[in-house]
Length: 418
Length: 194
Image (cartoon, rainbow over all chains, first blue to last red; front, side, top):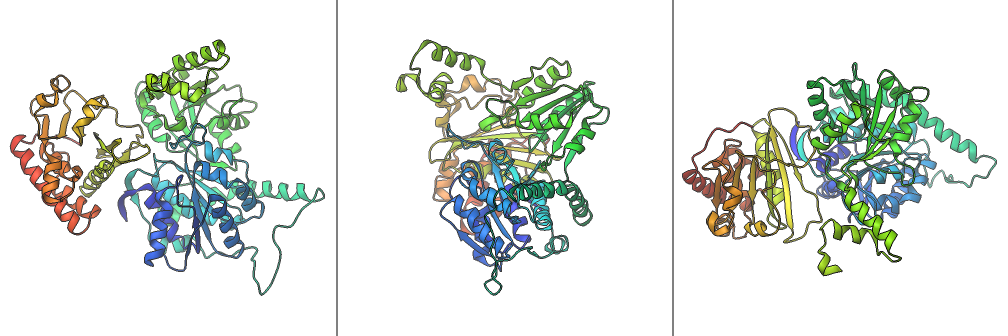
């Protein structure tokens, strides 16, 4: 059924149709409307046989999900930004214990400086925590990925993080096709836990593992994620069969046939990029894009196949490995080993800076001429950077960089704060 | 594609206006996208929201930089920020005010717009009369429907009902109709393509 609704609300409806038995969440910022809507559904009885637990922190949210999942309940939570960091220890525990929890991350930047806007630094900080990470291109795909996420998680007994661009998707009202409950039931069988904490048949979970076996436990976690590389496309095919929509899988390609330049990205920015690609194609440039719908496990082979014939790759990412450069780009380079293809890194949209068609067009026009630097910060205000660097050079106590830059950018009145 | 940018202050329902507009377009079978300009929302702070309407699926995720219609829910914003930024040469301007353009001191910013493309409606006063609260958002959508063909008044009414079921919605609908009549008599509608 088509509805014009907020992304968060559509995701909440999808999660509810997956018949979760425990939803736990810390409802204070950073959070989206997803858990608010689910809480309302539980209270009104529209989502029955489900317990909604308001917890005191994100650490508690995921810890409760770990407990309920270990007790055999289909468990869900959601967070973002600093909230994900606060639950970091539990993030590793959930995957280490092999518990198939599904968690939405409404992608946002991480402070300091404080910033509530969108980028993908939060999910990227947990990329090696052992969770499967799926990234949504649109709100429709975000909805679809949640339904697939429970099935992937429970088939392999690994937790799945569904990454949805904060605000840009979570707060956007657009058309979403809400599936029928019968379709979801056909696609997603009831949860059959591999391990259950049951007072009638006591076992222990979370044993201490020493040097004699730790490597093997870790290896098996890696092995399971490698299995996911096969499972994720199969589940996407099955989803298409039942729901009639192409969602999920490892990667998706846009106008990559004969493309000399391929943009690799992830998340919602592909929408704007696709519009720019269309106008560049009209101007005769052979350009296309590949979106990583799955970031962990990393689809190295699928991406290698997609990039094998192009002449250059531009990785556009909303995150930064400080002291190194692109996070996604360095992973993409694993796919192009042995190729002579240059891989350019572009960091954009940090802390919610708008990514405009105009800036992308200028960027891609430079890219097709191989005129890009190895790493580009899209729309960076060089004058402001220069002024701060000069201040640091000239003064022994230049003050706090973020506050200085806010004054230079005219956001804060210099006269009032000087 | 038709792009709308709404400026107001926290508490005036700027985001809800964009949302209702997108629902109205959806009800007409169109594709629509409504997004708030994300900020730390608080009462009184400047707030911006965007809406796009098209016959085709909308992929674009940049903010609305070149609006076809600018809705100003609070005229005190003229002194605070450059609300006119990017307004297209044949764009429409809809302002919540009982004052004239001259009294607002925005003749220079509006002189390039075609005749009849600047519309003023005292939406807060209309809302106070009918809704008993200073909420101009739904009222202005009524006026929007009158001055452009982008959305039908019946769709606006249905969108208001969806967002605010019951008495509050009915009061807003009455107010939106008053604004519709007022804008229609002062600004005869011209054909606009979404």
